[in-house]
Amino acid sequence: MKKVSLLFIFLLFISFTTAISQSLLVAGPMLGWVEHRSALIWCAVSPEVKEATIRYWESTNTDYFYELDYTGTLGKPYNPIKFEIPKLKPDVLYNYEIFLNKKPAELPLTLTFRTKKIWEYRMSAPDFSFITGSCVYLNDALYDRPQQPPYGQDPVILKTMASIPADFTLWLGDNLYFREADFSSPSGMNDRYNTTRSSEVMQPLLLTRPNFAIWDDHDYGPNDSHRGWEYKKEALELFKNYWTNKTYGEPDNPGIYGKFQWSDCDFFLMDDRYYRSPNEYADSIGGKPNCDKIFWGQRQMQWLKDHLISSRATFKFIVTGSQVLNAMNKYECIRNYPCEYNDLMSFINQYKINGLVFITGDRHISEVIKVEPKNGYPLYDITSSPITSGVFAKIKDLPEYNNPDRVANTLVMENNFTQISISSRDKERILKMKCYNKAGEVVSEFSVPASELKFK
Image (tube, rainbow, N blue to C red):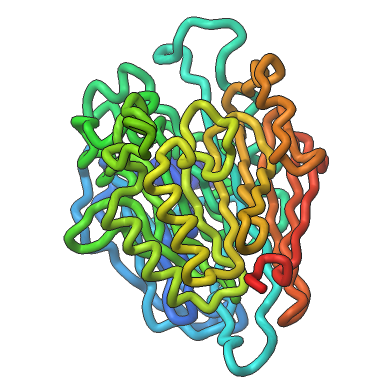
């Protein structure tokens, strides 16, 4: 009887310590950028955590592991933390564990990441794919507007996204929605990040592949928010705390913009809020484009031009929250900021920038817009939206529903996300897009070869 009692106490202790270990991990881990010799891993921990450590090892060598302690401040009401792991080897699969207060965080999946392969000057560019989409609204009845049915749709689509093979996830903005009670204070905004990021349906997508992100209005501030948003600096710090991009802005020009490379493709992540004019500025004055109406701002535009002109990538993806090419978009679209739009188009033509593709979100529909400049090659804008928020069904009542610039059969009017893959060899590289609904069914497809996106 005494042995049974001791066994019961022992099992109870194990169960209790496991529960404590799990509760100490609020969200994540989330895999951030992964390069040839280093990687970034994010998680959020409770205020009770006094020590956080990551242990990692080569999957083929379980006899030897490395440990890295978190050296930042802990014990705050919100504790998003990052581990930047150094001295890794290229093209190696690593396992890792998170230890909180010296106990391993119990998770249902084995945690792994693979460093990048050195392919340059050795072989053809590797094929790859990524998942992308925008507009993630998770219902929270206490803070949501009282409407029926609720604005947020079935979040199971996030698990569907995690089930689709991909090398990374690219979040296109409105990755969460600040409510009125949230953006009235930085603390409320922080709580919304914490609540959304800790949602159970988010976890598989966060930890199974690297994550990159931009923002749009709802995860920056109020609807249609702009450069005048009083908590813009706080919003920027929150974005940097909760996301895992490689860089954010420039030393003397803050923002979320930055770039990364994957295989033979460059991704330019643009900030469409920090420097943006209010939409109410006139597009033109006296028949001339109004250059006081700013979208990215002069410094960010110059940054983009500098990187585009020096890029040797097969595909150059400009990733931004609002659509770029849609002339029938009467809401938020760069074409409604004619000085910057004309400047960008002129630069592309003058310097013969090949391989350009826009990836955008925001619209609560998905579609591919195609425009053909008088000089140059066809330009495509791949819009992916919404993941869980409401669908823009009213487009059926607008002339835009029959947009002549839309690629046939690419309009999707249900919750969805997009997979983009780059495949084939050298000069035959091709971009293929598949749009999936929440059930994992393909509802739209599109492809374009790199050879089509070149000046003659």
